[in-house]
Image 1 (spheres, rainbow, N blue to C red):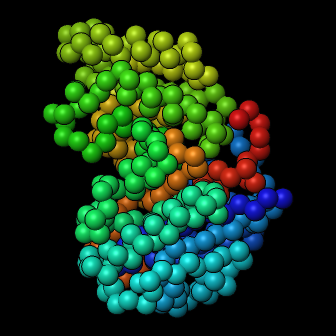
Image 2: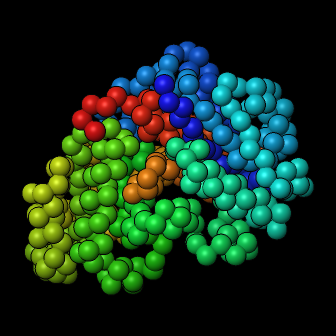
Image 3: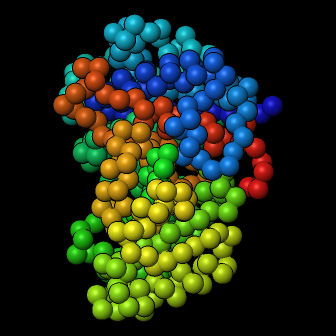
Length: 350
């Protein structure tokens, strides 16, 4: 049996990343001891068979501050993470620094960037096979001279991937924004047939390879209200989006519908009619997702040579160090990262 390793980064040591990581790791091992995995997490996947014994053999490499993690575990009344089976903490040069709580500092910025550099080095060397990331502060990347605005862009650049796909997923709804962190006025120019073609193809491949969907069902939103209403409210749907969807529906191993009015597409997807919704811009996708799955949703990056999962929340400085942060998103991110490995998936249909 080949060893499989999930790399886990703590994120900003002054934020809630360490807290949710400690709580989620312990809950994961409680569940494994009971011979199960959280149904909430597994509902994010498609038709998979989870081999619990294989999942127990997964190795977990945590890139974070041991002192901070042990401090949190002591406060939580749980054993140190290194006392859990198959868990290793990979220390970096900032180990034991005085990070404080609830604010970005130079040492905290250096730490969270160091965790990512260390795990990416191990990914490149084939020592890590899936990645789950804690929340970072985007200003930390700029402070440390990292030429990327966030995790997704950095990981894609390291892997040489031009069009990574950001999926946000909960048990009932999975969404993909075709354009992400740009102004609404720039969406029209950014949305090009080549971009959307790449996103849809990457989504189909990623859902089959990493999430167990043998024949993904995708709903494609329109750009305009009522999907343009036949050209009355914009012509993108008639001019290029409709023909593109029709072409891809006939060539890809997936069921692809659209362009659809966004105000109803999410409703039917949440009822189980579709496996994922591809939206045209950030808030079109994330508003319905967070309405349904504010605490438990996770972020996945498709298109990489491995699956990267993450919490779908930030550093939450306002509650950092207070033991208030929900660990549901981190727990789901850990489970899906583990399930993406061949140890935990059946090979059926993908």
